[in-house]
Every structure is written in structure tokens, then in C-alpha cells.
Image (tube, rainbow, N blue to C red; front, side, top):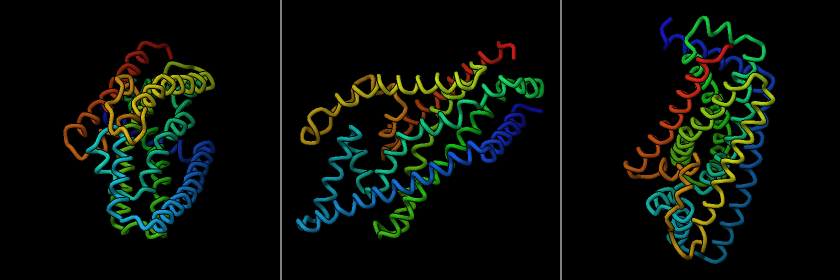
Length: 292
């Protein structure tokens, strides 16, 4: 088979395994159920906020301005804040929470993607029938697609809640909701690539789980203090430039992917997919030298 056919075959097998396994089914149900509960919680919180605005008789134009200022402070970018400020607040809130949850979903679905095959020696069956690079890319595509489907389920629930509450016209809800979901995909690609890399270096799944969890946590631990420092002073002090170490963390690039300007958007795509590609290349190179 050619490399594309090999990758497609492994990708399809990975999808079947993910959606038919007990682990995949349970995690999908828990994630979607958690997304539904989160949607209801955010909806209740938003209802209280809107009631307060109504009681104070605050004009809609002023509410929009406050949203845009808050989001500009959050993203550390005025253009992105002004653009995303036009979206229903519930949709943005779920997007922000989903970015925090994505590494956990990747961790649970991907820690044994390759390590389990190595432990049970089934990897030998695939490596004699396909290139090892095709094997790695197929595994990554399968994990990425599975996690994307779980994320879509979470997002779809909030679309239903927003529609039921009349948060915005249905077309706007689906349009913004789909954009937020798509914006999380390049970020998800990086998390999946790192998970595949670690799994490919381990023969024991539990070690792959602990190693991946540790790396994800340390990565966040290095990033978070610099994110906090970049937001010191609150909204009143306006938009500040991010600290340099903020750029090491995948989730930080949501400000680029959601930007209405082509330059930052393409930069974000290039950095995220470039990092994922380099990680997969390193995985393939190391995996090719291993005796499986």
C-alpha cells in the first residue's frame, strides 16, 4: 500500500477501536453529560447576570462595550476582544472551559494509543504491513478525530441551551458555535500529537498515562504564572502585552485563531500545526529506531 492508504487504514481502525471500546464510550458519555450540566450551570449564571443588567436598565450598547473590554483583556488583544464580543456569552464561556478540559480528554483517550500495542506486541503486526510514519500519523488522526467528536458533542449541547433560552438568533448561535469548535481544533491537534509522542516511547500504558499527565501539568504550571502576570491590574488597566513564556502553551493561541485579522490567524495556524508536525516527525523518527 502507498503511505496515504496505510495511514487511512490505521486511522479507520483507530476510530472503530475508540468508539467501540468501553473506555471510549464511558468517557464520551461522561464528557457529554458533563457538558450538559455545565451548559445548564452557565445558563443559570448568565440569566442572573442579564437580570442584573435589566434591573439597572443598562443599554445594550453599553453591555456590548463591557463584553468587548473584558474579552480584549482576557485575550490580551483588542481586535480579538472586539470581534468575539459579538458572540453570545454562553458560547464563549463554554469554549473557554472546553479548552481547559481538552487535555484531560486527550489524556484519557490517548495514553494507550501506542503503548498498549507495544505492550501486547500487536504493533509488530502493523509495522510489517505499513511504514512506521504512517502508523504514527494514523494513530494521531484517529485520536484527533475522536476527541474532536467528543468536543463537538459538548458544544452542540450549549447550542441547544442557547437556542432554547433565545440567547440569539439560531443562525448566529450555530455560526459562532461552529467557529468556536473549529478554533479549538488546531489546539487539540497539538495536545494529541504530544500524547502520541509520549505513548510511542512507552511499553507500559500506566507509565504513559502518568508521564503524559505529568507533562501536561508541568506545562500548564510553567505557563499559568506568566498568564496571571500578563493580566495584573484587571480590566481597568486595559490590554497588556503577553509575557513571552505565554507563547509556549497551546491554549494561549486561541487569541490568534479567533482573530478577525488574517495575519494573526495564519500565524496561529502555522505555529500550532507546525508544532504538531514537528512532534509527529520526532515520534516517527524515534519509533523507527525502536525494536518493537
